[in-house]
Image 1: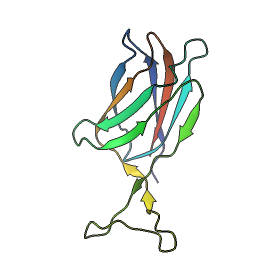
Image 2: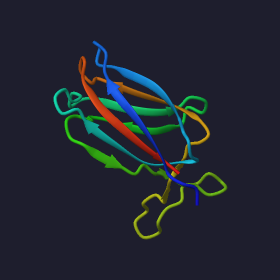
Image 3: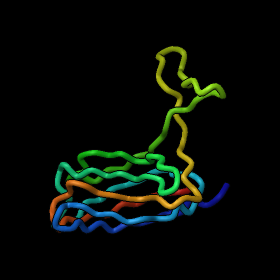
Image 4: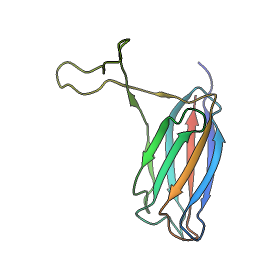
Length: 127
């Protein structure tokens, strides 16, 4: 098993409430991410986070309303069989989900609607 790598992103929004940067996925899979708001100037409640593959356009994270509370997510996506049909759990019809393969790819990280001069930190674990 490959080691887990942590990528930290310090957020500071501009006057329009936006922030963007790129990160390189150091591992093949995006395992989890965490948002920690700044103690004195956290992002506005309506802040939106998007993490998108720069080459593929694959959406890894589309999290709305970040706000003032720290949280952690383990993003997964639906799986499909060789014909492209969704894999479902038989009993409930819920999608079968698996980790997202992210590397090697540059990821665009963007915050919108965060409020002017607001801050926080994002942590991304890859492995």
